[in-house]
Image (tube, rainbow, N blue to C red; front, side):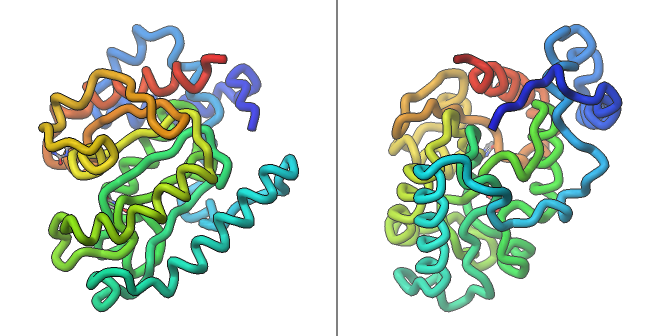
Amino acid sequence: MSRDPSAADPGAIAPLLSYLGEIGYGDLYLRDREAPMAVAAADSSKAPEDHPAAPQGAPSAGGDREAIAALAALAQEASGCTRCGLAEGRKHVVFGTGDPRADLMFIGEGPGYHEDQQGEPFVGNAGNLLNKIIEAIGLTRAEVYIANIVKCRPPNNRDPLPDEVAACRGYLERQIELVAPKVIVALGRVAAQTLLGNDLPLGRMRGQWYPFHGAQLRVTYHPAALLRNEALKRPTWEDMQLVRDALRAP
Ligand code: URA
Ligand code: URA
């Protein structure tokens, strides 16, 4: 899982610049001498659909192989889950996607319409923005792991209820254990409150690292919130720069 940014194609910077321009950080980016290097691993020639949901590539070690197999078995188990009422309305269980041994894991709230239809997290508008955010720190969607607090879509995208969160929690805990990321990003209030076990507003949870199941956890805004409120894009980018730096630290 080595990601030497210096090995990157400088041409890959173009999509980042376009993303940053779009979300209003162009000037900030240009002042940050580090950022262009960080970007390089992103391969802009690939649309998100080109990254299959299934684990890619040969496991590098026995431990990886076992963890990957265990994660696949857990996904299989979850696919028939009836632990809560959300099972009734779903089309697909949306278990997770990406590199099963990723250093970086994103945790959202729960599937929306498109996710339920396709069985994959973050494939709608918020997902497109999340992909750009991931690429802005020099990674691709396939190189991170993405999951949600609840694996089945709540009706009308309402917040998941406490009993639904509780019923699903074991899956997420096993996912975190098996992926064993270095850094976890909680996307939005519901994910952050659930993971941290509090009821604080999102703004109070941002701005610090939390030790979490052997990883470091950081809270940032949900990409859907960024789509509603442009002003949240800059603080999110600041959070993500810290995430990028933490991933690079030894
Ligand atoms: N919002 C989420 O929290 N998760 C998804 O998978 C999609 C949108
Ligand atoms: N409230 C949320 O639920 N998410 C955000 O990202 C910001 C505010």
